[in-house]
Picture 1: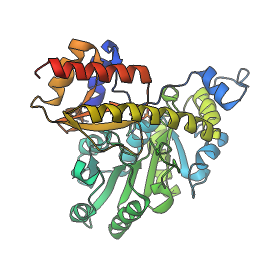
Picture 2: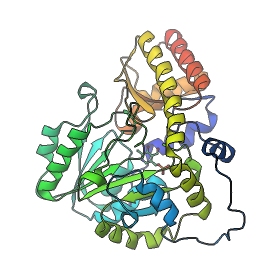
Picture 3: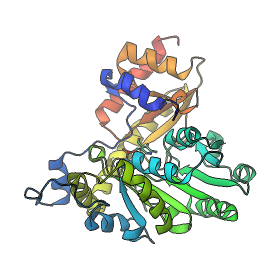
Length: 370
Ligand SMILES: Cc1ncc(COP(=O)(O)O)c(C=O)c1O
């Protein structure tokens, strides 16, 4: 199967290990096992567990914890996967076929257009625009959707823009999809990180019968090292996904299952730690933006990243390459997400590094005629 290179991953592979100030990361500062236990007040009781495959479809404890983040889902509506990346891939391999019409928002995580394209689907883009606060234009969506549309792919909150689709708009999108019976896959890997209360937007799986939600503990719980995600959707779709899953998962690791259960059972504690971290980072970033003449952006209201436009003539990958070469500051070029003249900055990580990295970036812009 021919598939396009995953541009963001390629960029990370090339530049991350050399970064002195990494402003490209999308995680909220990751937790150690000790930090997880301290925040949650839990004690480890795993040492006598045999390291076998564990529960093939994930433990009941884990699935029950995941259901607590949804209004309408129970254990039969959840399937456990290797991260959200595994969840998204399983959904596409299970439901999309050659010749199907798939509509994906862009910018988004590249899986959502490159995997359906590799299967032979006809992928159309719903291009998000800064002047619309990076929200989908529903008139444009209506024009793109036809009776033959198989799937609409969303990402809410969005990576890279940090835009959160308002609940009323999500209901309208569900209504558009319902007319032709299309699936909606909503990558909800940042769901739980809305900056205002309630931190959880509604999930597509809770409001639309053909809605499919994917999620994980990587971003919301700062546990990307567990490689644990899930799909939530109706049990008919779960059945289809489980056929594919037999071929690439068997089970997730029992340690991943165990620590993820602890984290999700204590979601309020971890999310409040993470929101505090994100809001401090967002303040550093927005103060920097108001003092930096060359940039413009919509301040994000969810997730961990901002998508920042700039008014210089240099393209974004040249800018980011040279910036990192000269200063060690790593920023992700928008070109990796098919938007040149934009930069993705993550602000959920170490604040000192963020502050210093932005200062160096501004200084470099003053001295360097890019
Ligand atoms: C929108 C989006 N979906 C999925 C993923 C993959 O996440 P996971 O670590 O859970 O596989 C990422 C990771 O950056 C992401 O940003």
